Length: 393
Image (cartoon, rainbow, N blue to C red; front, side):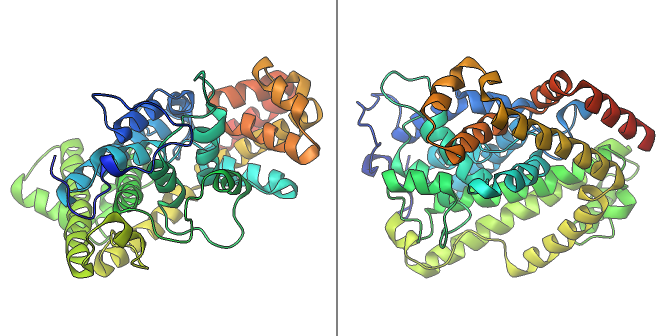
């Protein structure tokens, strides 16, 4: 493959924390991607919430389907820009590994509970997953990913400065990820691919859930023009096909905007290496100002009509109580955690260390397992919450 000069070159990797003999048929970043795909945490994303709780419908996105969509978008953009597609895809697939059950609702609840112990941050937790919590290999904990993949996971949303989340600080103490700089263009692509994927699929899922209608979103920028283009080309098209055709055009607008803008910025920057990209002082893979303004209007609509819809808020309240019950229970009764955690518990030096182990355990739960554990440990409370939710529907 021919790479652009500012791409991350596989033969110039800074290597892995634990040296390994490299593969004769896979690049270092292909191995990273493959290890992420085979990780237990990646499989568990199948049963973790995107917006709707996992069991609410088979057609809604989960963290796993979201991550796969992000990976597809990221590879497309990276290929168009001459970047390293394997590294870009690895970051895209790993970016949500640290998410709790119940999406951002679960994260908010766990962060509040963890505040006395350093808080909780899902991006930092993803680093903890790939450097420590995955324990399958004979010679190391974690996945022993390359420096470039770790850096990209840590910094895909930009430099990390100030007080570091404790999970990221631990990793950075062992491997300097140069957190004060911007990440590679590949990491920046993965971050924008995340935005593109959720902007697109949240519209799909909100429509499917009946939280708003096609007519509602036709009032929004970009989306209205897409529907009108479909109606002009395919008059009388049935509703489901019309919606799909319109939203795929919105998707295309976002992808094209990012590719066209990144090409211009990279050319204007004069970057001739990945180190040049890191030292530019600003990201090169971003939405144009015009499209960003439109997307902010779309996100504001989704916030009001989807993320804060009464039915979603009732479910948020219910699942917050699940996390709020499980955390103190296992903090007070760590012996009830599975056997694989007991070695870490025995070695924990103080309450903070123990709380962080409990946090790791709960963060790794799927939606269904967290609900199952709540029903097992608190049957009366779980039954009452289910009754309240049913009454409110």
